[in-house]
Image (cartoon, rainbow, N blue to C red; front, side, top):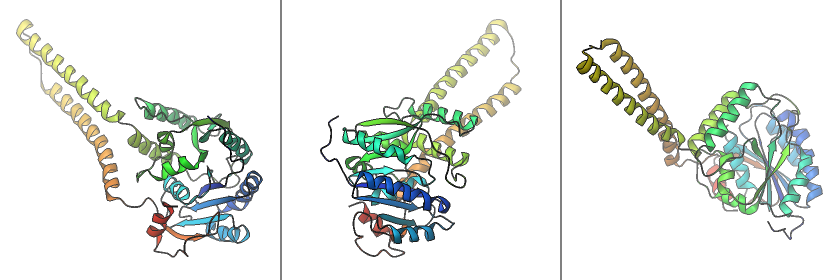
Amino acid sequence: MMSRSNPSPSISCVIPAFNEAGNLGTVLPQILATLSILSQRVELVVVDDGSRDDTTLVMQALCAIHPEIVYLKLSRNFGKEPALTAGIDAAQGDVVVLMDADGQHPVALLPDMLKKWQEGADVVYAVRKTRDDQSVLQVSLTGLFYKMVNFGNRVKIPANAGDFRLMDRQVVDALKSLPERNRFMKGLYAWVGFNSTAIDYQPLPRADGKSNFGLRGSLSLALTGILAFSIAPLRALTVAGLVLSFIALGYGCWVVGEYFIEGIDVPGYATIVVGMMFFSGIQLLCIGILAEYVGRIYEEVKQRPPYLISQRSGTGLTEPLYAPQAGTAPLILQQSSLL
């Protein structure tokens, strides 16, 4: 990696938020203060993912005080991955940082991340030291997920690495060029490649409230990640089919041999019933796995935008091209991808 000649790049910080009104008033000024020390040209892009609390009121007040803050309100709750995509599309900086709105990502790491970027790294991602704040079940499922998604995959997704990261502009442009609708950002970060380096961190306690991302959301995201970045389930079906075929062939030869050689009649009713139930279950499982892949294909071919913006406030690094209005979200999406 070669060192960069730009000691003070413009910095954008993308922060997705869902019902985080109690945290934004504290977290955003801290992030802005830290970034302002690192660069004279900074912006915070806060993406409101359809919050139902007072997030809009809090953000309007913050935008009035801090012109560096850009507030994007999505038309509904699209999920964290589309919210991150909206923020990445809107970010204008030479360097883009991704952080959560709950205050668990320590701002003290931002100088170290920028230093590694100046030393030549295109991506600096944070890796959790421990998962002491999670249950044993969630830790076990997380470990199983990374083993499954990386099994037989040329692109390895770093374990315990989340969305907290710093990316160079060329990495951001590469992410913006990817057309997926069912987006698994952790996989996309790894897929685009570039020079990447890890930095350890320990998540801080939440500034306020409880996490909106529970076990159900984690399982749904894990399923999306496996289906988007691994064909291992399909290969497993092929292997299972071959194994069951050989077992059936061997069992058939054994039954025929017993009948003709030893003269033993094999009662067939129980064997047939058990066999039919077993293979019917296997077939339904296989159809279900195939249906998940086909469902993703169906979502992709519809080519719906991953998010819609209903409101934009704030200036950030550049003046908005026009005053956005409700109902013009697809045009906002199109223009943001060209900036």
